Length: 216
Image (cartoon, rainbow, N blue to C red; front, side, top):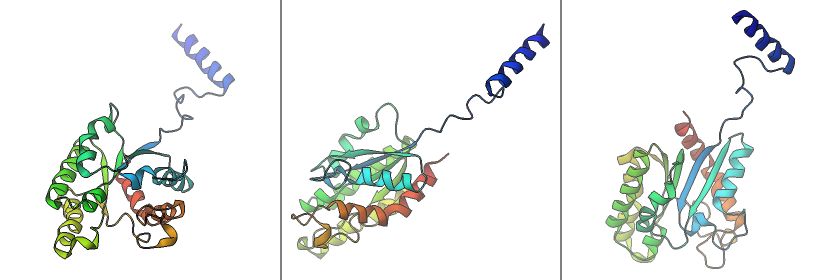
């Protein structure tokens, strides 16, 4: 009886071209989910749909053969405290596999205490890592009008955090775009669509390192 059932199952498998025990072989793997957690620079301030950082990064990674979904977790005007306060909601019931943290620009523009910014980001990174999320920290730089003492304290907090929490660091999110009028909107702060493309181009190798860390 058992031999007969096994024979029938084998015959059906051959008839429909589905080898026994390999029913999941053709199912594609779920995309790796990357949360881009940030402020207006991440949210895509004043840019057309699909032109912001998360969308352009996902397109660039897909073109390089990565199966990814980049989630836009940017909120315009957000500070490090704001990012920390909404982290639990942003993670949801199913946390992402990785996160790019781009926060602190508004702290610097407002002249907030760098020590408080560092403490907020430290808590945020610790919570992400505690949930099993691989982290890439994108650094910012203080406005020069706040003076060298403030700039030293603010600019140094990102490499300190990366060392302390052993996470990847991209030193300056706006590298190659800041102070380049042709890549910035009229406000001189937010990148144009072409500016975002330059950010993505420069950051891509570091994001691929993040993907490698987040891949089981």
